[in-house]
Image (cartoon, rainbow, N blue to C red; front, side, top):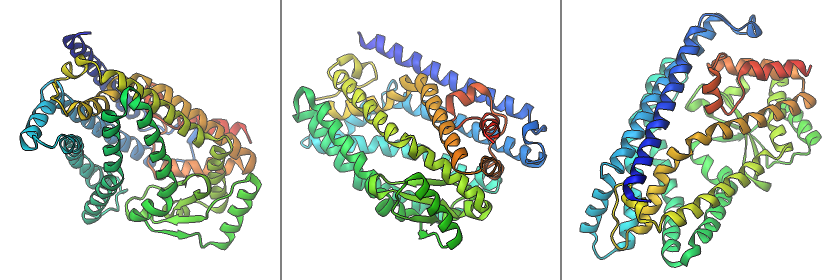
Length: 419
């Protein structure tokens, strides 16, 4: 393949993926707005017209912001690749650090990540302090936003820079099978993060306290015993510091598993509904969804690193994306280019991932219906849909591409059949 041919393929793939993203977004906006004033019959008497309109307006606002975010990302990608931004950065670093090729490669990767973060930063600011604020969800202060950003960057640097250094060293020193060694390092890193996240990383951003409600705690522990689930504890997280959205989740891996409730969730649901929501989460545990997703992620990363190992030896891969690396620059250039263009070529696979996730949610719901009252899970979901301003009328194709959870009508319909 020639560099010109690959440039054409990349440009076409980027254009098609962006056109598809924008088309799906406009479908979603039109579909939701057309149904803004009519609550679906399935939810009549449960969701008010005012709440339904609010959810429609919130959905439209989020989709529009997503369109802006996608366009900004595409422009940055073009600036980096076909418009020569990466090559300019390589030349600049080469002039600054001519005798330090490894440090130059590290700085190159860090600079690209920082540039992407700087483009995302005003969008995230707008998301919190304009969009979320307008709909009454934001509880984050500007100071907390800055602190979160800096702490997140610090943790990413502490964890990510050693891994980056190791991968670049393996690419240069471990021969033709460097990608296999790099995969081993990547797998160990991810499993290690899963182990330390609950006790080390999560407390940096939130406060976790043991569940104090004795009656609810006894009820939850009885459910855990019936389902054969052992955890390191039941915790309440101060999610209300940042948002009015509610949630519950498992975190950790192996013996470090914890069950975490948002304080906003506990304040909204009754005991029956909390038990039903937890039973749903236990359904994921019962069906081993988390280990399966981890295994799939590791398999995909192995295939990706193999592909990178092959592409890194192809001159057209670099030149077709606007880069001509000098000696001592190939490893970082290959890694950055691969990570930048992979989402473009991988976008058509998104519906498959979303479909698998929705199937997992159906399975977890079915499990919950056998270990808790189905009507309690239905009422909990309706409250969460209303509180989180989730649309009840998504566009079918948009949902197929993006939604990790089934549409509300299908999900609740199945639960009602299980009564």
